[in-house]
Image (tube, rainbow, N blue to C red; front, side, top):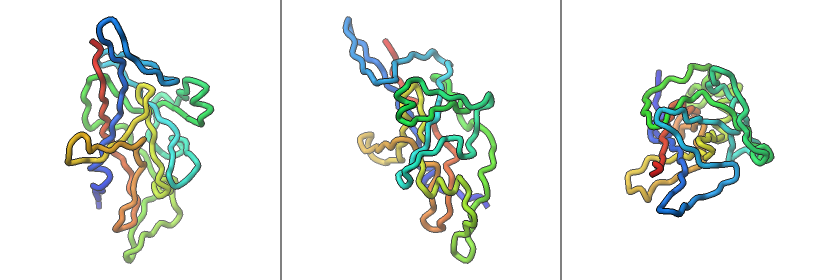
Length: 201
């Protein structure tokens, strides 16, 4: 039986916000963020998506992204720390298998198929967990993925019905969620990546 967990997977959109440098006349206004510098991309140029350690609001200990059985890059996992500050903050930035091309729309791209471990079942109205898998444990401890694009952190936004002013953003996005009715853990296994950018005139 395939169940859809609409509250978290179908209604959640993941947005990556990309900063820009604004130019006007003979003067320029810019920002400086340590470890980040503006970068220009040509059409169809690869925009690298990197992964960072996962954090939780329920557990003080971060997890390395590939501690869980997520899809891995075909050419292997590579460390992507760019400065000492990232290392000292405990960031564990690594490559990802996601392929993003500038100004190229892509739909329903299959990244990989991977075994996540034994699932949970409902027996006599109660969730039968048995020995918890790493994935289920991370969902129940409310771990969040923290992705990075163009040296800026990814943010997630909930579905909204009002104006743009009503959008709420969160750092990263949850690995999954626990269904309030059944008590079963569900993984967020589909993502909608939306890149926003500014053109340089």
